[in-house]
Image (cartoon, rainbow, N blue to C red; front, side):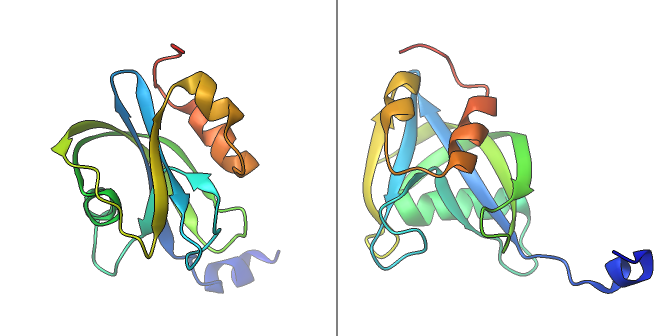
Length: 141
């Protein structure tokens, strides 16, 4: 691509994914039928609102989608979503509290899984599997 044209290209919108751990387990959610990627297992994900930081978006999406409070960790991966629509930032996080309460328009199921159980879960995007493999979560089963 011409360098002058690259500077003119609009930036992709930002999105976040939050890989929450608790007692050596990972929380994954199944996307609701009315959401993007219905039926797929993912970390908690969402769009970053205008004038919102990535960190604030991560906290908000977790609260909205699953009703939990987290201690947000570090960014462990960045990339483009599989459909190329968003620049995605992945965070590690640990559970602080709350009761699992699903936002049914976005999430149809949620499970605390070992790393071994995560590898068996389908359907899941290859990019999601690759990102989880890069995380700092415990390798216990």
